Length: 428
Image (cartoon, rainbow, N blue to C red; front, side, top):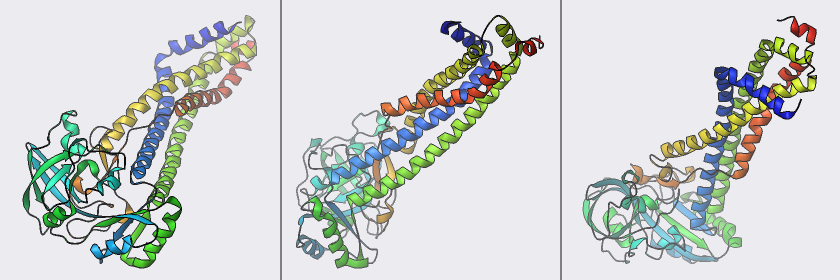
């Protein structure tokens, strides 16, 4: 008997029992879909976070005052005087509502010097539209990309450069002020700085708008990578418990550890799903063996060898695994994009609220930029991510589905191959 006959006999039984075959395949689909969806989401989030941290740069050090302390111009001078420090960027942050045309959005007001925007956006980023504000008290502003191009409008621009806008500042010292939108920031993936939902103004303008003379946080840039840890330790020694000091590499290490743990958890969940699928396949194939006992007897009486019978049932398991794996990959990919969209409140390219526990201090009406502010989406840092599907993961998923199915089918196939023709024919 050749391979074509084995394949035909395998498909024949699967096609005759369509409902049972479909339910068996579904068991595999669920396990593979879980693997694809969960691994692609964690890979996408990990990639996005790495990209977000690279925007600030590996030499960046974030300094946030404790709830009982404040940062002023003297702190900026102090930090600027430290060895191996090339730049110090103070930031003022607060929450507000932005009104422009038909738009009413919760935003984060970010006060930073025009030169300091390059440290928040990345050195290679430039204004998407319009121009960057000047370091004056004039309330000119550059808004985030997601405010100008909200996801609910299919990428159609809703706020244009030069249009009038109104900010309603939230908090006890809040008020309403008219601003001039002179530019739109580029779309930047960041879970540390809410660039895409921020309204950027000069430090002087932020002090007036938010009625604050202290800074929410300070971004320090070390001269080189080798001096980052020493500079971070020095700043920590100077401020003690009065400030939280952390480097981007420390954040990345913590996030990578968390994502790694989640990856193991998700892998265990998917593994349980595949184990259930394997048990189901074994059960269904044992039933098939008992149902086809008389057929097995006839085949052996006609000269089919035990190896031929074994191959027929092994091919059945292999086909179930292959079909389940392919469908599972498609379903898992769809589920990954759906989950990404749900987590981000829209399309998978939108921002997801994320909070860094290291910077959860809330001060006054604003909180701090590197830990999320208060109220609305504007007070949260944002993370843009899309699922990542490495070709190796897809190939491994198909291989795993086939291996699991074949292993599950070994015992039923062995039972079938070991049947004696006389005993099998008695079932007629």
